[in-house]
Length: 143
View 1 (cartoon, rainbow, N blue to C red):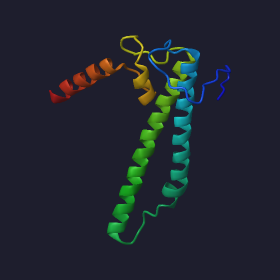
View 2: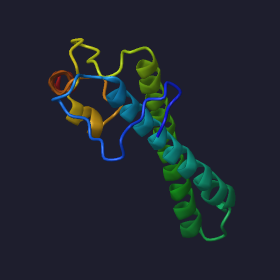
View 3: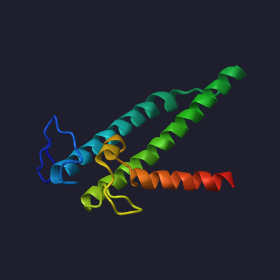
């Protein structure tokens, strides 16, 4: 796996907290992971549009069949919208990699743990900041 800056990620490479944060290999690992994820989403989106959305017949004579088809269609559109938003977040993360800003908490500026980034490569907050953010949301929601 090579990139424009010719950093090679070994096939068995797993980023760890023991190495220098966002060294060239780690950065390339996340760049490739994000690109692969985006490609999978785009491929799935294309096939869904071609098969489901273009072939769905919403004008069925039976009311129950029509309601079911419309529900399926609406669900598919919501799923596509969520995927579109996810692709935008992936693109933002790829931009941050290019600008050497990837992997740092937007709230504290501290590095986000490698384990968190590996599990959720579009994370923009450290675990602690995310938990604080969710507690604040819950508090305001309960008011």
